[in-house]
Length: 72
Image 1 (spheres, rainbow, N blue to C red):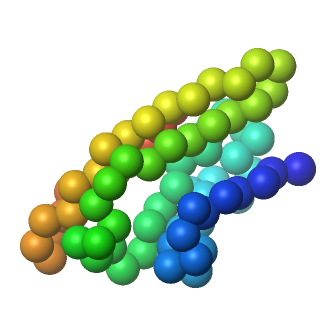
Image 2 (cartoon, rainbow, N blue to C red; image 1 turned 45 degrees about the horizontal axis):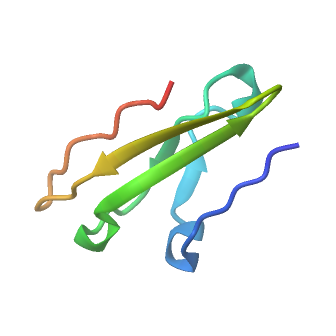
């Protein structure tokens, strides 16, 4: 059972897990149609036995923004 909180309804249709089953220890996401307004801090919380929190700061620049590295 996976729960995703997008934080913003604007992201909901543009965010997807890279792997079909993030329970396989890869919770990487892909954001489609990046926009400068997507710049900010993104947080991933994974709860199995304990809660692990990872934060990534994403800066979108121009039309050829760098890819976001996997969180894991």
